[in-house]
Length: 109
Ligand code: HEC
Image (cartoon, rainbow, N blue to C red; front, side, top):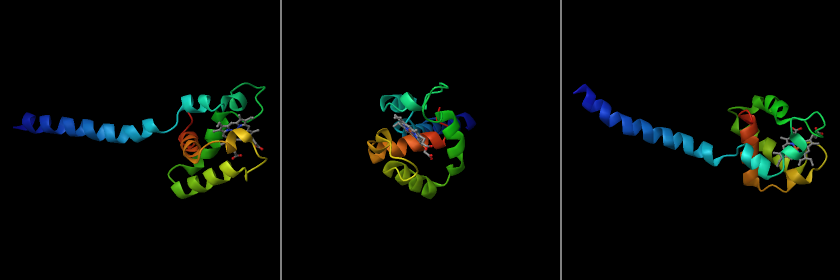
């Protein structure tokens, strides 16, 4: 009886995992960042013109779990309000910007 119940639970657990994992997979990753040329300036090299993503991720981790603050930050980032305007930032679609910022907030790995 018990194993019968378990057999029904396994597909459910798998379905739940897929549901949870899929939106994450649809979000940004280092490939998107690489595609968008982010590493040209944000690479780990000491000669990079911009802070490394590792450092940014540490700074941005304060937004974890605060979607309102995250949205606000994405808007500022996209409009160049935070600092001097950077084309590579402002040319992103809102979707890409949101995905990349979320990715950084979650650690940028
Ligand atoms: C042409 C160089 C360049 C490229 C390409 C670039 N950035 Fe930047 N980015 C910078 C510089 C420079 C800063 C730091 C500005 C400052 O601190 O005044 C910065 C800052 C940032 C910040 C921090 C903003 C803050 O809170 O101070 C984020 C987040 C960021 N970049 C994300 C990205 C992403 C994502 C990409 C890829 C789409 C990208 N950048 C591509 C130059 C670049």
